[in-house]
Image (tube, rainbow, N blue to C red; front, side, top):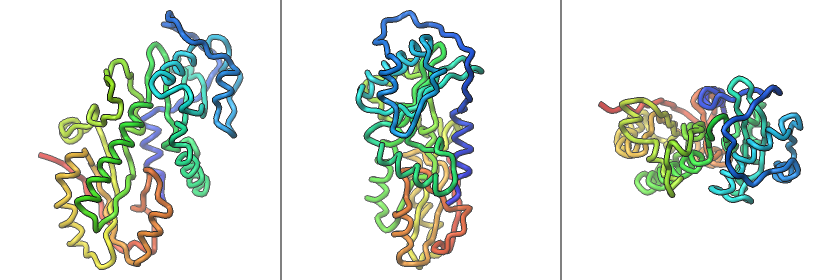
Length: 286
């Protein structure tokens, strides 16, 4: 299964940076529950370690700001710290976390990435929060992405039960916006805060790609026709690309489900012997 495209998109979307020692902090005039080195170390994910050079007194002040925000909105005992580092080029501190509710999924993705020889930083279950002069958080978009796919999959299965669908690329997984400027309110799982037909199909701000699998015996013409009937659903959920696959063995779907990830599933550029036909459909309006 080729994962090159999604990780390229991820790198472009999140701009993951490298760490450096020279740093300054600003806009820290507020009362915080101060995190110590031991407090942070106690939250670190098993098997991970942090660079002590990124945990001096000034660093801890900024990490305290980030973690206080996460504690308030996610819960103080709801996550593991995956990494924490400073980005010199943007004067930013970064904290990456894995929610405990998604820990098993994190492990399964890591196992898959390791088997493919792909960097573990491509794991979609890793959430990034940053702080320079303001906080930026990937926590809310992560929840929105999960909610988006859950709603889409439920409606798809209800309307098109003869076919199987999973996700390739969810742009919300690679967004780290300022939560204060976004003004989410109490509902931080509402993907419609970002995804709308206008923003997706007219302004081209978002890309969301899914895969649909058709059973043995489906013709290319049948697949084209079925994809056409599904377009109202795609518009509703701001899907921009659909990859259609016609399976050629009865147990093909079992194989796909066995290797299926929460997102990042992709076969279009792979030679898989149980897929007979492939087609890419760009979903546009107007």
